[in-house]
Image (cartoon, rainbow, N blue to C red; front, side):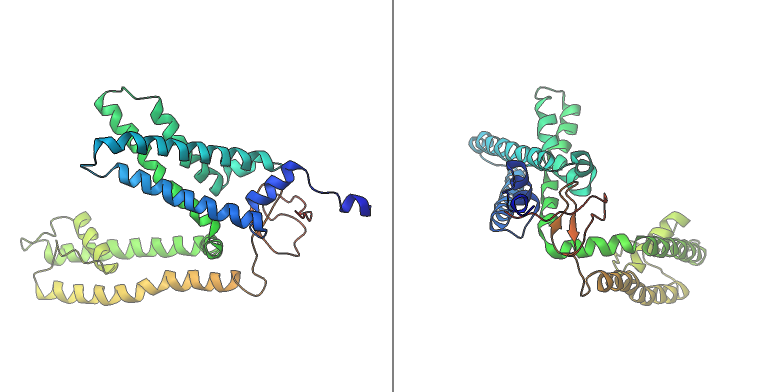
Length: 282
């Protein structure tokens, strides 16, 4: 039994530890290298879209972009190969982001000579490569706490947004009743609701403004109300973050079966798939 415990992990397990775990020197080096590659690839994508760029740069940048695409394809394949349930990881949030990082380039390669209207679709697919920046979330420890808090407070936030929508509808209808008959831009209830949403969120474009004293008084009340409303979702998420990021907050430990991270060091089973979190060492 002791001999089995000291047996070094096989190649597949070593790859899993390097790619999915961040607590080893090799894992940290891999994460830092991948972060730099993500930032560089996003920079290339943005630079290609700059108008007036020298045509001599286009071909080298496209080749560099293909190099990043191949690199991320290999990384994605290794992530799927190194865990026991690749389908679970492929359907996860980070699995979808990894796929979005490489898929647009391959799809765009099949339409090099399409008509103009189809080129617009290809351009949209190429712009989707900017989603590579979302891969950075996986390497920010605090982002896991925020995501857990957002998931936990999803129902409360949805109720809050529904209440805001009802409130904006009522305010818009009242403003249409007050301002809609005096030649102002409150020409319909939908447009008045648009004004109410802009005012409640304290954005204040200024494209629609009330002209009557009563309308201006109501607008002032809505503006003041907007400042108090902004604090509500912040308080909801903050309360969940305090609960999630407590003394027993999870670390970066990953499940060897599905690749999901965020398990406590004393956890025995994965919170996503239920598989055993057996201890592994490099």
